[in-house]
Image 1 (tube, rainbow, N blue to C red):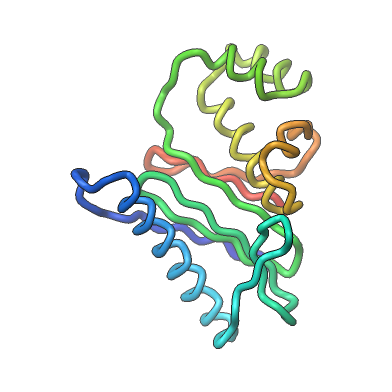
Image 2: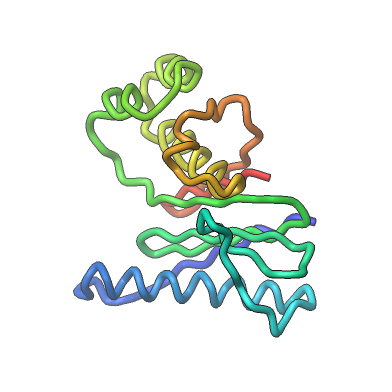
Amino acid sequence: MLKIEYRFVDYENNLSSRKKSEILHSSAYDLLDEKLNEIGISGYEIKKTESGKPYIENCDIHFSISHTDGLVCCVISDKECGIDCEKLIPRDKIKEMAERFFVDGEIDLLENCGYSYEEFLRLWTCKEAIGKRLGCGLMKALKIDSTKEVCSTIIENGYIITVNV
């Protein structure tokens, strides 16, 4: 079983970054709760591993959530999973960022596509999703060659969502 869901979230642009983040965080957990209820899981308590990975105790269902400016998403699976999303806003210095954060195989891929920002974000969100699936966090996931992992990507309305199961 694999269920990927996302939802766009509207809020006033004049809100503080902290308030926007609170709204997105709450909206992501609301989406997760709604989707868990659809598959018959309710009355659960979310706990966290020592590394901070959330899970539902005594349940064979795994999940991951993510949010970015204006979007929340979740993945629910019967296997360990991770999800990440980003807004597609072009940035400068992709090559420098890639050389700082990516491994050789990923840099080769980016060189072959002319350091496409979309490809850069696909690799970045894949790393984030891998880190969430493994429960190891981004710093360790940065050392993993995401080109050797199976990641699925959705691009819609200026956002990229990547799942690793």
